[in-house]
Image 1 (cartoon, rainbow, N blue to C red):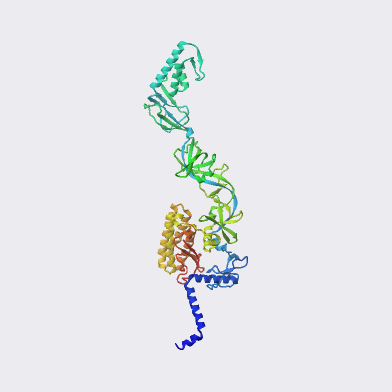
Image 2: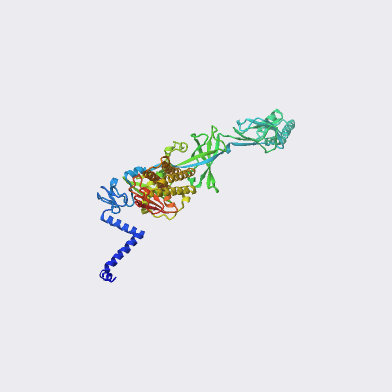
Length: 622
């Protein structure tokens, strides 16, 4: 100790410096924020020296697959982080801070395709259902007009549903009261004719009677009020014979909808005898939501379709719009006149209805090119060869179709079909720019992983749960699939090939269950991705895994589909826990990324050979 003290006195400064370095090193190693601050400083230093470039217009560019942020224009340069040789970036392009750059191979793997922004003539469409009813203008009810009781003497209509013509005899009624009225009328005429031969023509009734015959006139009106026609009364006066049975004639041509009486049945005044309807023209009542009311107007053509006659549309016309909104459903009833010459439409039948309204030329993009983030809409714009930019746009009218699917009269050729839908763009795009229409979800996911959207767009404050976004069954299925995915990833990271087969099978079952739930919810896109996961996972069952490379190759394909599933269903921000995305540039399976539930680097592609090899690309926060 006595020997050490003089040495300490002579070199106390060096000792203090060494202790300081040791404390700083320990703090740096134990504190994640200090390590990140150090890495940021190292990257800024590299950028200042020209090793890392933010944008290059031409010439060869080299990058590190393990650390994509390291780029250089110097050939044979090595990555200062992992000492790995840099490889040439195809196309010689490096993304600017707001852009996303992909190689030709990445574009092909993602299936990216683009279309130019154009001004288009489109139409909005309402697709709803309606109920067929009788045309009230072609509907008639026939009742008994005779005082007191009368009897149905004979029916000339044998069954309900029989077609009758206007003026056709339907029934004959026997009425003692009406027979008495006829006797009174004939006696009044005979009495007055004996008193005078002077005749005159009444200006109001149009028949020839002696002047001053008030009693005869009163009896005549009584018979007319009980259902006899003026012609029938004139015939009685001219022939002097009593009409024993009162005939009932059809007031219009149509179908007997209801026959209320039988032969021999007694009826009283006001009792219904028949109901007739002309079914060659019908009404259809359809419900339209109040926010769609601007798309409906009088005289607008409509297309009707019934399941009984697929592919045979029926044309109709909007004839009336209800002035009152139904408070329970917040809908407005619209009446459509529908011709029915061949009788295909039946009253009470439910019919599919399609209404459309032409929209003047607007700037529009295909609907699958628009990505929704909360209330914001984002499109991926191609800036050059392999360079893409996420851009926020303002969307106007949605879900519009091209007029190419309609005939000259404005009616649609039936329903369904592979018709492209468009969204109107009010701001953010110009005609001639090209937007991504296929593979946009993958590019959106990649851009988020590289923090492009975070740099470009303001933060979104409002958030919702996964259940609120896609429903409880689908949210439960996605979480179950992700848990089984993590189980498989952990087995591969530990080189436990003996566990991989069972965990592949568990993942397959979870993916199939999710696909079934998506089918029930009409989420065809989600169902397709889930089936893709199940397909890749089932290969281990069809062909037993003998080599770790087989399992990891299948896992790479599953990882690609899982990332796609999350990107298409809001999973990046709607999970209840953080999900981390990693990349391993040395994974030779066709896909380098994988997901994990913590920030611990456990490489499922490299296993225990290089367990911590990988770069954390993004944190998918809840």
